[in-house]
Structure formats: structure tokens, C-alpha cells
Length: 315
Image (cartoon, rainbow, N blue to C red; front, side, top):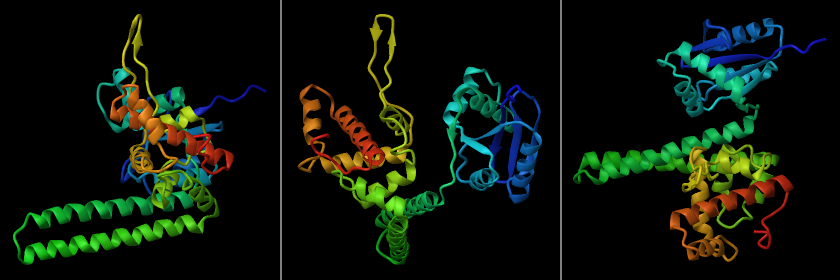
């Protein structure tokens, strides 16, 4: 019996609707981005009568219910990076950006690049949500404090300062909730304790890394560096070789790794020896810091993979 051909289904998600199309076909159709629309899509996928993979772009959380419904129905779902999808659209000369065109580009990306598998992980999703809310509260507090400081003494300044204080209190409460979510999960708690044995990695840095890098310990050193945007890309053509550079990746893990490395520069078994060696070799400070961030991430990845604590000799 001949194996059935894979069907690539692309979904462009907006707040109210889903634009759905099958790769290789010109037409697309629309469903509500609600439980009724998700059930309709699940039924349509089942009626295709062949293996199916569904490609979805991250859309600020609007895709969360759809992805969960598909995974619970046993449908394979893959994330399609929006920047790479748009790069493919430019390469293919897409004349405009509409929902129907986006569906076609998502389908082409899914068929040729594969995307990243989506998984059900409610514990990690809850942690990620708490940390995102904490960050939003902190940013609001900082903005309001700056606005209050620019006002003259009086009721208006006091009112803004009070709102900023409320945001600060909310950020502290969300910090407590996030750390409690880690403690409540045996898997996350074990991984967090392991990560915290590394210089510069505290409870919050560990929680952020676990929330935003679920692949930690599951992929190779090169793959984890690429996911965080810390893998150097070489520029070379003929006899000419340009400077390697890092780009793309997830910004939040990169921000936390930067803070961890800066903190570990003061630790006995931290990044200082490697940093000073790179600086002595003539590397700019930013290049040396980036190299130390990549080195730390690779070590953390190996620690989770092997179930081991930080080893200064191996580092």
C-alpha cells in the first residue's frame, strides 16, 4: 500500500477569525476564532482523509485556544516564524499582504521548512503568562514614575506616583506567583534548582529561561544557541570573508542571559576568565559578552540534558 501524501494546512490567525487553506490549492476559507471555529477546523482536517500537519504563526496569544484544541484532537501543529514567513514571501515576490496571501506563504513555509513542533505544556504556559504580566507591570511602573517625576509637586504628581506604586506591588505579587508556579511543578522545580547552580543564574532568570526556552536540554548546542539568537552566522563569498554576526532568535532568553553573564563576571567560577581571555585577544567588549552568553547557554543546555549541576572544571 502506497503511503499517503502529507497535507499541509495553513492558518492565519487574527483576533476574531481564522483564514484557512490547504497548501497547493488557491482557495482559502474563514472560520471564527472561537470554540465553534476550532471544532469546524478539526472536523475539516479529519475529513481530508490523510496525514495532516497544521502551520500557525504566533499571533500575540490569539492562537492559543486554536492550538490547544488541535493538539487535544490529536492534530500535529507546527509554529511558523513570522519573520521567516515574510522573508519567504519577499523571495517569492508576493505582491501584497492579505489574509489569503499569508495563508499561502504559511503553507509554503510549512511544506519547505517544517516549522517548530507545538506541544501542550500548561505548567510552562502558566509560568510564561505570569512572567509576561510581571514584566508589563514593571514597565508600567517605570513609565509612570518617570512621568510623575516630570510633573510639579501637587495632586497630579501624587496621583501618578500612587498608580506607579500599585503597579510595583502588582509586579511583586506576580513575581511571587511565578516562583510559586515553579515550586508547584516537580519538573520545573528540579530544572530550576539545577540551573541556579550556575554563576549568575538566580530564581527569576531560571524561571524565565524555563518559560521561554522549553527546548532547553532537548536539542543540540548549536540549535539552542540559534533559538536564542546567539549563533554566529559567517559571511563569505569567494576569497572574501566578512565578520560573523548573530541575529534573530528569541529576545527574552537573550536579555536574561546577558544579565546572568554580567552578574557572573563577579563570581569566582563565573565568566570572568573567558571574558578576560577574549578581551586580551582583541575582541570588543560586546563580542566577548555575547560569546560568554552563548557559552553559558550551551552549559545550561548540557546540565538539563544530563541532569547535572554546574561543574566549574567542565566550564
